Length: 163
Image (cartoon, rainbow, N blue to C red):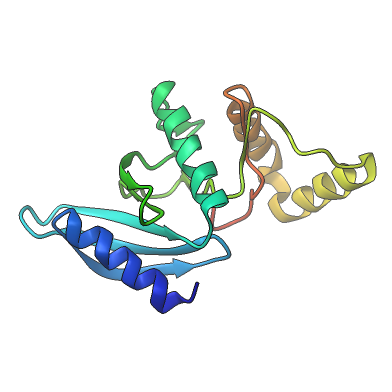
């Protein structure tokens, strides 16, 4: 699905909820994200339109799991609250958070960790140490807390975890 198609989908969702798309915040392999503004109250939220059902389902499942556990912060990192969603349009609407934050649950796994060889895991952890340097232990603590809820976060990179 192209960015234009994702935008049209996000606009349909927004219109159905009395919202207007505002700033485009970014695009990635999972989809695209826009800030929205309520037509009635000027309240702001964010909508993410997904490329694929799989990533939409994973991210939706994570937000539902976090909501079930009443978790909106992991360590010092704020997590957006899910406001609404649409299975029809593969869109999730969420609150706006400011740094430090943890975003983007589209590549997560629920209730199981993907299998990889010991070498692959070793390479992954070495790469994470290089990326995060002195923040590595704090990032690992965040990932561990998510795992304790059955959320296996697979995209721990700057931009998704912002200090």
